[in-house]
Amino acid sequence: MAKAVSVRGLTKAFGARTVLDGIDLEVEPGEFVALLGRSGCGKSTLLRILAGLDRDVEGEAEVPGTVSIAFQQPRLLPWRKVWRNISLGLHRPDGRAIALKALEEVRLTDHADAWPLTLSGGEAQRVSLARALVREPDVLLLDEPFGALDALTRLAMHHLVEDLWIRHKPAVLLVTHDVDEALLLADRILVLDEGRIVATHHVDLPRPRRRASVVEQRTRVLADLGVDVEEAA
Amino acid sequence: MTLSIAGVATRPKTATPVQTRKFTLPLRWISPVALVLLWQLASSTGVLSPDKLASPLTVAQSAGELIADGQLVEAFAVSITRVFFGFLIGGFAGVVLGLVSGLSRWGETLLDPPVQMLRTLPHLGLIPLFILWFGIGEEPKLALVAAGVAFPLYLNLHAGIRQTDPGLVEAARVLGYSRIERVVHVVLPSAVPQTLVGLRIAFGTAWLSLIVAEQINADAGLGFLINNAREFLRTDVVVVGLVVYALLGLTTDALVRLLERRILRWQKR
Image (cartoon, rainbow over all chains, first blue to last red; front, side):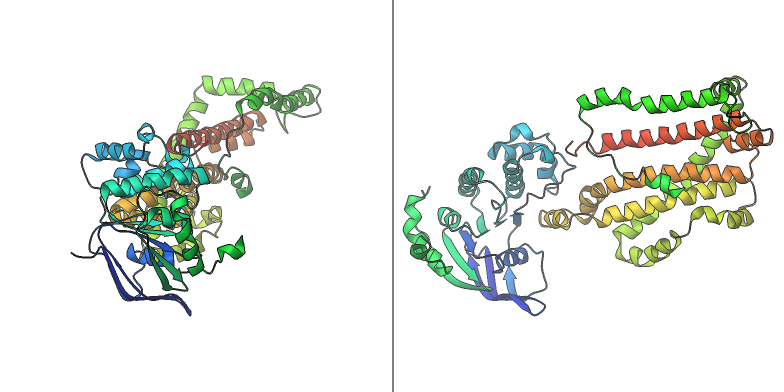
C-alpha cells in the first residue's frame, strides 16, 4: 500500500542556517503521527513543505493524496460567513449543505451564518478543523492547532480531534511542543531537534487515553527532549 | 489645504457608547451656536461691516432668495455635474491602475514608480498646464477633479492589496482555491477597508479641486456665483456659496461612512 507521506533526505536551509537536516519519514495511511520539539527545531518548516508552501528544498517529499491543513491561528476569512469559509475552494454546488454537515461534526451548526470575528478562539479553531476535514484529505496537517487556546478548551479539542480522526481516518501529522498532547493522540511520536529526528516512540496505549496511563512513557519522551523530570520536580 | 483633508483621512474608531453620545451631543453644540450668536451680535452692533462679512441673518435671507429664484439650484447642478464626471474619470483611472499594480508584479514594477513620483506634485499646481492643454472650458475642471481623485484611490487600493495577510493567502492555497478565487475572496476583500479610506480622501480632494478650478474661470456653477458676488461686495452670497460647498463635502463623507458600515459589517464593533 502506498505511503501517505514519504520523505527522503529532506534538507532545508534559510541562508546559512540549516533548519531541516536530512529528514527521512514515512507515514502510513490513517496513521496519527506527532512531531514533537522545541520552537525552532524545524517541525513547522517540515509541515509547510508537506503542504506545498515551501518548494525550495533538497531531497524528496512526496504526498501523493490530497492534503489539508489547520494552523495555530484559525486563518478564517473575516469577511466571509462561517459556512462560506468552509465551502469556499471546494467547488461543489451543494457547498452549504456540506458546510453545515461539517459544522455539525464540530458542534457549531448554530454559528453557520455568523461572522468569524464574533467567534471565540476555540470556536474559530473548530471551524478551521471543519474546513480542513470537509476536504476529506488523505493527509491532515495540524500545525500547533491548540497552541493559542486556553487549557480547558484544549482538552475539549483533543477529544474532538481524536473523534474526527477515528471517523475520517486521514493520516495526521500533528506539530506540537506539548508532550501530553502527543502522548494522548499519536500512534507514533517523532522527536525533532536541530532539524533531525532524534527519537521515535510508538505509543500502543488503548484509546481513549487518560493522563495517568501515559505517565511512564512521558518520562522517556521528555528525556529525549533533554528534560529530566525527576530533576525538574 | 491638504491638511484639512488629511484630518478626515483616518477611519472612524469604534463608535462612542450610546449613553455618552446622548449626553454629550447637545453639549457639543453650545460653542458653535455661541459663535454664530457672537457673529450676529458683532454685525448688528456695526463692529463687523457687511463689506467684510454679512450677518448670519442676511446670509440666511440671501440663501432663501437664491433658492427661490433658481440661481443656487442651477449653480449647484453645474458644480455637482463637474464633480460627478471628474470623479468617474479619476475613479476609473485610479481603480484600474491600482488593481493592475496591486495584483501583478510587472504592473507594480512599471506603474508604481511614475505614479509615486507624480503624486508628490501638488495636483492643483497643474492648472496652468491644464489650461494650456484643455483650454478654459469644462475639460480642465474635469481633469483637475479627476487628477485629485485618481491618486488617493490608487495609493490606498494599492496599499490595501499589498497589506493582505500572507497567512490567509497561504491557507487559501493549501485549501484548493484557484488563483481567481484567491483574488476575489482573499486579496480584494482585505483591500476594501483601506480603499474606503482612499474613497473618503478622494471625495475631499474632488471638492477641493472643484472649488479651485471654479475660481480660475467659470461662467456657471458655485464658484462663478461666489466670484460674481465678490465683484459686487456681496459677502452674504459668498458665504452662502461656501456653506453649500461645506454641505456637499459633509454629504459625500456621510455617504462613504454609510457605505463603510454596510460593506464592513463583518468587522467586530
